Image (cartoon, rainbow, N blue to C red; front, side, top):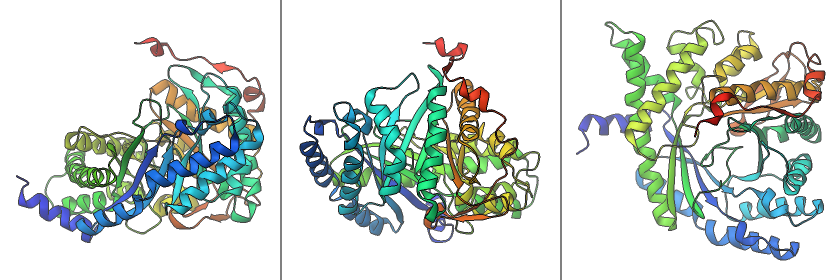
Length: 457
């Protein structure tokens, strides 16, 4: 029986503290659509998405109304599309991306992931075609998101891919200069990419997953913040151990809500339920910020000494609470620090307390990496690649997922602001020190070998 206190706490989280289901993501395997004739393949892709995802939005609305909890985003994640390009020439890339973009629009979803390639050990023909087409695809479609895995603990870091992605990010931003480089906000570079992540831009349906599956992403920075405020208002002795315990208890409740709704959506669609991803994913809305949690914990200036330790405590406690609540926790569960999407983090960048170097340090203990970071538009591709390489090294050596979603905003410089709108928010430009000083290093190419512990099996 659920204790009355837990029921009342959950009602308060929904009504007052901005608890929502951030994303319901339906994964769809498109490999059955493979065909040597490109027109037939595109027709099969459209038909597959329409047949599987046609009822997704209605099901989400029905479940949301039943429980009184908002489902913010309805999304699709398809199997990596580079595999479908193996038997086709490069001129199929854009028509295929447009086909999935239009199909996503037809079924009413917000965004679709899976324009993806896994190249940590090298490139197949399909991988190379997809990566080469990313700037054109992301500047010519509305809903398509791209992800490329360039490193893993088992394989090391593919530096040829890292340098290529630095160039592709820059070109993508250039082609969307009228939107402050927004195309780059739909592109993420990974180390150790998860196969069941419901959050964009890195969602795709990985190998080993069911043919169709619902993964759900539940967020709740406002809930965590208010729980800590109540703890501190009560007075008495409060130490960091008690703070961690309060975060765990709150995360437990949030995870229970997410799994309940995710399983019901999956049941209504007649597909399998995958995981609940308990990630503290902020929005630009005041009161829905990971940065504000850090401030509540006593870091008055985000980026000050202690910021990395605070995010480590938060990340660990969120994971522990979620794992205790469900055996189906997965994805990227933990704390995100996407700068432009979090008004407190963005403000810390603007006032100079949060630098690129401190952000990198914090990513060593958070759930993802350098996320939605806006840099000057004139930063060269080699420097972008070096930033990616640093983040990949953190993931590879520590056997964790790390990622880079960086936007070199065309025409913007330090002190300027790039505006993307919606959940993507707006970001102040972060200074990139010593730009151009790493060109020879990244230019060597090749592969940074896997660390010694990669041999464990």
